[in-house]
Image 1 (tube, rainbow over the protein chains, first blue to last red):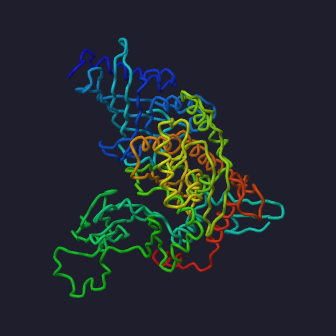
Image 2 (cartoon, chains in turn cyan, yellow; image 1 turned 180 degrees about the horizontal axis):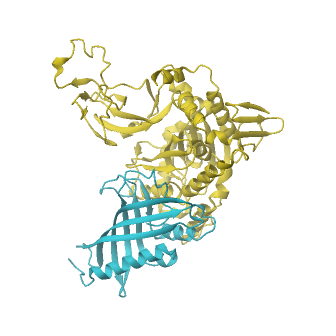
Length: 164
Length: 437
């Protein structure tokens, strides 16, 4: 139980601000929230908590380089899956802080619901996110964001071309 | 202009024209005909032997709309059962995978051994002495179950030709897929996603070299961007795909090509760094020892996208993929994708392998979502089919096989085989379907 100088309200403010950046498609600003050693992870539906990107098939297992490329792509006119852009709304709730192993980290979990609408089609992504946050010069940054979906497949949603 | 496939395919070879009716992607009648004349009669992929590692291992799969148990019984034998209790029909297995010595029906408590044998019924006394003497009340086996090089297929037509004959000259490409890994591992988990488009669109797309450079321009941007990040600054990767497309036996088709990425089987790539060279060289040396220099060069350097008619895709490209395309309605398909690896992979190589896979493929890749978008736009465009009624598949000459990757001879051959299936006059399975209804 280290680094509890940060309280839940500050973390919630951070998560709400992150959600606003995503929903307003300010993706470069969103990407700037990540550390150089970051991971953005979305395991395939149905995988257990023991799954890692090495032993299991994920949908997304980005490091800083790939996340950068993912974000750059989403600004391009020929990123067809998101042209025109989806309308999204990220709902964050059940925010909790957890004990951490590393002195400089803040471990957070929350429930999420992401609503996506595009071309008359609506899909929802529901699940639990866990974050490993760090403080850099007084600002919070994301070292890891892991989004575990509460579903058995993506037959309804089809694709995760937006950012969760 | 002659037509085949219930008038869904129109051909004028002399004029170099080949068209497919958009009706073939939308019609309920065509969908029903495909179910009885193709999916009830062709060999369909069920699973890989590595997914059943021990006695009792099972996987449940949906194949052509049927619920199937794929398992290894206690004697080690591989089976495929219809997941319906012979008593009243309830599914006896709700998990996607696991290990089970028995399957249990919750309704009246019937139990079945892993080999399907009915073991126990509560209140057995009420049945005649000859009850199940013929085994008709054991879990029902699929009519045919055969394997080729660890890949298990089923067929609902007991009179079907053998799997090996069905695969025909596609076996050469399956061999390339299988031979590159000494110890095949099917990575845990599956990418299962829906596409609001007809299933045949994805089968075409999986070997359509014409679309790659255009639709996936942002992926090739990525491939170029990551290459120069090395300290010694190698030249940016050449974008695009170059190779040969070929029509194979029984409607199967393949593209074999070079691509701007590395291959764990033995093609080093600049973005992997100098430190990666020894391990990739060792893989290549091992491959040479197992299959010889010439075949090793082919396996290591070239990518292969293979479609086994009607709906299995083996991709040996940025990732090694087993992809099954299941039609669930004329305008909707369910895609199941598994990743193949070599159990010998070091942590580093596994990272590379998965990054290769995920950067391009799947619902969160930098390329597949654009394929999905394109196929869904096609399906949406077919709402105009009454006036704008035909797809064009005329690229490349009409006579010769083995054309450039971005020509369409092989896709025409797939459609010709599809049409042949639809035009079958010996409708055994269809008659059986009607009798059952």
